Structures are given as structure tokens and as C-alpha cells.
Length: 166
Image 1 (cartoon, rainbow, N blue to C red):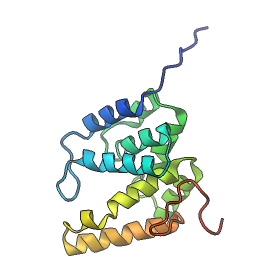
Image 2 (image 1 turned 45 degrees about the vertical axis):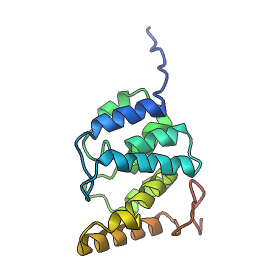
Image 3 (image 1 turned 120 degrees about the horizontal axis):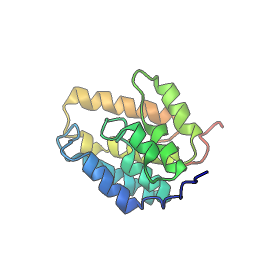
């Protein structure tokens, strides 16, 4: 019987390199390099007290959803199970209702903090200001609804604490 030698998980810096390469050439809705969003989310996780596993997940939070990395890559990557679980939790699935998505985020330890940082950057007024009015309004409403589903209050750093009413 053979046993697999455990691999040392990638460091956040190594994950950053992978994420930047995976999203190379991709831009956000404002035409900015997508890596700027990834950096902002990872930094937001760090500022909110996130650990290395959450910071790694922040760098990868859109990679599977955007088709930049496959779920198979994620499964085989030298990442902790928790980092993989967080990435999967914040990966939206085609046709999935927002309520089901929010429930998965809330049920996965560490995922709420990553999603909170993602929403904070997505809803940044300076970032939204460069978009056309209808897109800005649609996204503002979408992000506010998701914050409500997650039990996050605007301006409040909640991390992994239970949402209000829990």
C-alpha cells in the first residue's frame, strides 16, 4: 500500500502568483485589470483579521467561477481543505438562487469574511462611479441584497460571527 506524502500548502504569495496568472488579461466591468479586484479582496480579508487560508481563498475567489481554473485544479492544488472549501463556497453556480448561495457561504467556516471583503470592494462607490447609471443601480441593489441575505450590515465588519437573529 502506498501513501501519498502530504504537500506543504501554497503560501498566500504563491497563491497570489497563481491567481494573477489565471486572471491575466481579464478586466473588470470598468476595464481595470482584474488582479486589482483580487488584491483588494485579499487585503480586505487581511484587514478584517482573516488568516492565511482565507487570504489564499480571497485570491482564488473568482477563479473557478470565471472558468480561469477548473474545479479539478482546485481539488488537486496544494491548498488546505479549508481554503478549497471557502473557494467552493463563494463560487456561484449557474442558475443558483441567491438564497442558496448565501446559505452555502454562511455554512462554510471562513467563507463569510471572504465574501464580505468581496462585496465591500464590489460595492465601493468609487469603483461603481465609473459605470453607467443602470449598471451602477443594478449592481448596488444586487450587492445590498446579498449583504442582507448574509446578515451583514453596511459598514459593519462581521467576519465569521453569526448573522443577527441567529
